[in-house]
Image 1 (tube, rainbow, N blue to C red):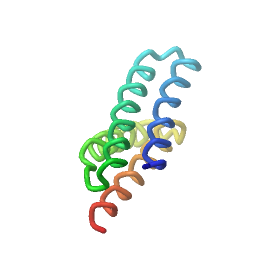
Image 2: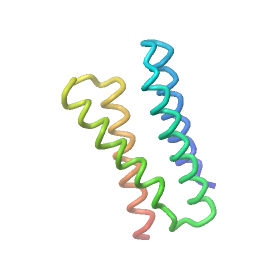
Image 3: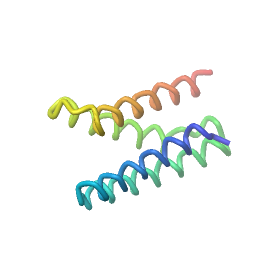
Image 4: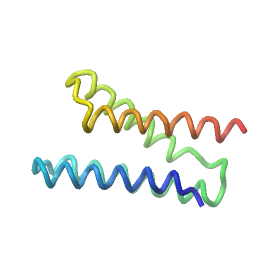
Amino acid sequence: MDWIGFSYAAIIAFGGFMGYKRKGSVMSLVAGLVFGSFSAYGAYNISNDPKDIKILLLSSGVLAVVMGTRYKKSGKLMPAGIMSGLSLLMVFRLLLLIML
């Protein structure tokens, strides 16, 4: 069971919900639920086959780039900086998982 992957997916979905609750941003809610769902599905795939990292790698890579760009433009650590950092850590974790 890929608890780290499922936790990452839950954090993404919760972050989207919090963006909606605090700022009324429907886009944050939709993006959080979409990326959270893809990440949860990717974590499910890794739980069944540890070498099947494609979906989770793609979703965390895209999220790292998008949120990293938002962090660079805004300079705000919350939420863009934290999400880009978590996503980058997930990308590194997945690359290590496939190498070992």
